Image (spheres, rainbow, N blue to C red):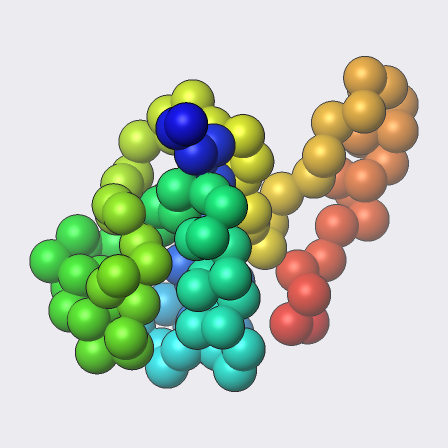
Length: 110
C-alpha cells in the first residue's frame, strides 16, 4: 500500500530559522525534529518542501541524520495529503474569516 505524502517546510519547521534568511547557511535542526520526522515516516512519505538550494538541503539532511526518513526535497507543491508550514493558514471555506486570519497572522517565533 502506497503511503500518503506529507510536504514539510524546512525553515521554521524543521530548523531553528528565526526570520533572518541566509541562502548559504541553513540553521541547526530544531529540537525534536529528528524524532518527529522519524515517527512520521513510518506511516507517511515525507518530503521537504523548500525554495532553498537542493544540494545545500541534501547536505543538511545528511548531517542531521534525516536521510533515511526524507524521501525527496522539492520546491514543487505536488499533490499531497498535508502541507506543514510555519507560514500558512487553513482555509475553512469562509473568506471573511480568512481575511481576519491574514490580518492577525504572526509566525510562531515572533
